[in-house]
Each structure stands twice: as C-alpha cells, then as structure tokens.
Image 1 (cartoon, rainbow, N blue to C red):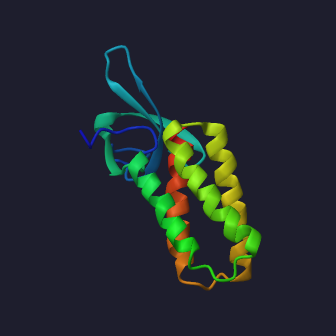
Image 2 (tube, helix red, strand yellow; image 1 turned 90 degrees about the vertical axis):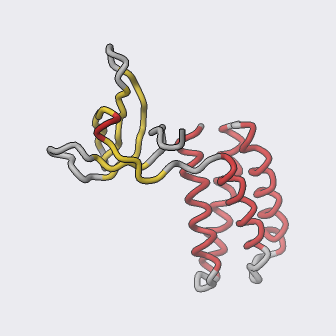
Length: 153
C-alpha cells in the first residue's frame, strides 16, 4: 500500500490544535500498548508524536529506484559541464558510478564517503560557473539522494 506513512515521509498535521496544518518529516514510527501506530514528526527543531490518523501524507521519501535514477541523471548532466578540470572530469563520473553501485548494498560509510566527495566537487565547480541551466536539475537530484541517505541508512 503506497499511502502508508513511513520514516522520511513529509506529512501534514490535520489534527486541530497547536500543530494544525504544519508540515514535518517523519523521524520515527512506534506503536502504543493498543497497537495504534504512533508517528514521531520533526517540526523545525522539535519532535512531536501523533497517531497516524491525524496525519496526511504529503510526499513519500524517494525509493531506491528513484535514487538510482537520480544518480543516472546526474551522470548524464555531468557531461554538460564544460569547465570541469581534467581530474574532476574523471573523478566525478567514477564517484557517481560507485555511489550507484553502493546504494543497493546500503553500506552507509561508503555511500556517505562518495556522496560527500561528489558534493564537494560540485560545490567547487559551481563557484566557477553557477549560471548554467543544469545546476537546478543537479541540485534537485542531489537533494533527493541526500534525503534518501538521511532517512534510509
């Protein structure tokens, strides 16, 4: 069932009261003594517990397939970056390919190491030319990968 609320999803609180209509990210799922699903939602810098019935799913966290598709899209977009130094022109696609291979293995250390390196290369490259149109697409795909890493590992 696709509408089940899971860790990492974005939800809207539809329970009347202090948090009504606020949006947050699910940080944990638990059950009370009556086996009612309790969802811990991160709202800004605090967390609050709600019953699942008090929440409305806004956005599902990215699936493994969506994350791999995002890596593929970034690999495709890297070819459009004309001002990449020679070292990065080789290193960036290789790191992206390794990341793509590491993701299904769910090896947190390898994934974080490669993602951090990729992020640093992009940050340095963006400084040289931030006006190119592909940056927005690269950023949205990096955000999707980052979201998946944060909520899945």
